[in-house]
Image 1 (cartoon, rainbow, N blue to C red):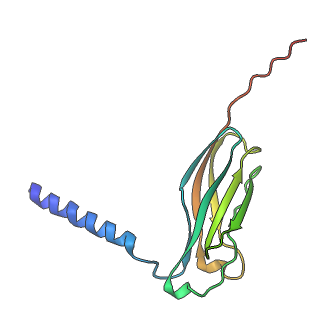
Image 2: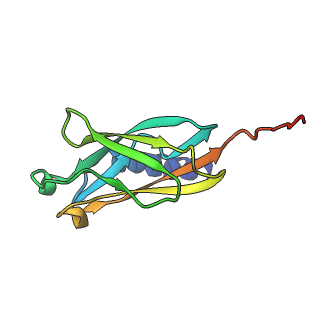
Image 3: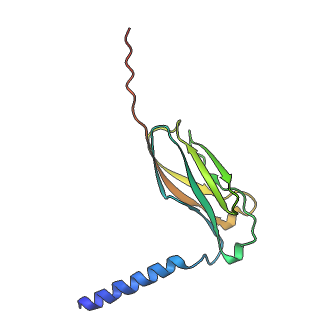
Length: 134
């Protein structure tokens, strides 16, 4: 019986690894280098993002992705010299402490062919003690 479970786990693991290697069958999607970000204090951070394409979408001209509106967040997405690769810069100085879902989505004429991605953003600023000596 134990040998049976071993083969099931082995087979499942093999197909899981293979599934990750297959390219997209249809459309395109946005991928971020990190799926969760922890921001301490008033940091400005940068992460790479990329548009992954299927063969079907290799000639589609996608615009620079954008961030779904989030109160207090300042961001900039800049294109790199490599096609479909961008740098996302986040400034969380005006974002209150908490956990947020940052949605990176497509823009432009062909955005309907581009699948969005979500990045978990945790903002934890240091509390500052202000002493007023009068």
